[in-house]
Amino acid sequence: MVFEKIKDSVNSDPNVGIFVDGPNVVRKEFDLDFDELREKTEEFGNIKIGKVFLNQYASDKLIEAIISQGFEAELGLGGEKAKESDVDVYMSTEASEAVFNDEIDKIVLVTRDADFLPVIQKAKELGKETVVIGMEPGFSTALKNAADKVVTLE
Image (cartoon, rainbow, N blue to C red; front, side, top):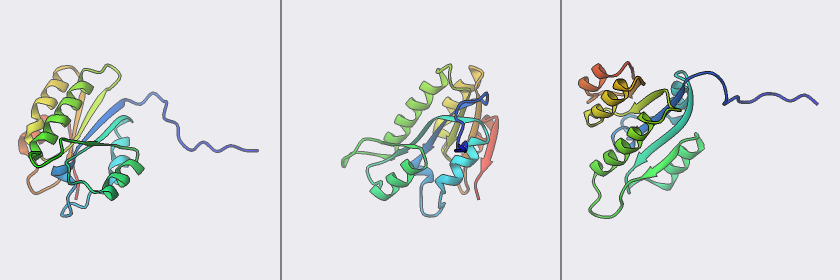
């Protein structure tokens, strides 16, 4: 019997934490393909943390698609008082934890939002490589200028 190696998730490539700002980039007008996003992120190293942050309006179908691509779906506060900024707080907190995690070498943020600039700045200060993946319109110039690498999705 011959065994085919399907995936090797343990190698010497850098470890990557990817954090996706769902309300900002998971929209019909952007048609974000999670398979393509995962493949693009794997070019930077091994995905060790992969989280997509969503608000209470996320459909079960969307959550299923996220999970099927190997990401974790993180839901922000629910209820009538939930705001898009609540998702930003959760994502910033999780991304900041990864910045201080010695097992993570690169921080990838998928957003267009300058609210995540402090995460990029702290990551760079601590010697982590930073990547921002976003799309136009509204891709923050400050965020693009702060990151080590920028990927603009068409």
